[in-house]
Length: 102
Image (cartoon, rainbow, N blue to C red; front, side, top):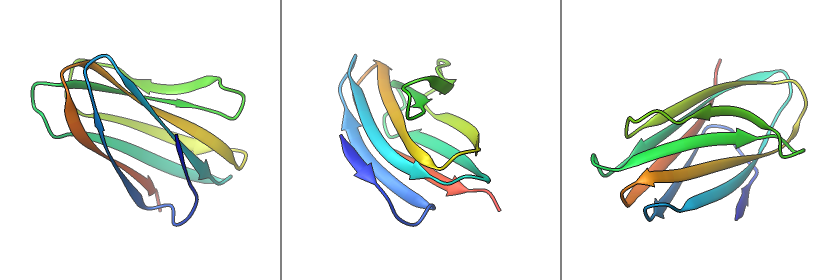
């Protein structure tokens, strides 16, 4: 599991097999709003996105049957978050973009 700390507008690339979960850790900062986009490169795969806070509490999810996913998050305390990418079906490469809303 990689940890990312740096500019908040960032891109994370990965690949995933059917039934697997990739975990990514990222610091997000208080009093900011973020949009996290997950884009699937295989139109037949179904990728889901979940975000957990530093206490491992699930705080957001997008697990519909579309290939792409998105979560909007308002952070109240700077902390390390975990982003989980899960393949509900199919294998694919993916791009996850974390953007600070301005």
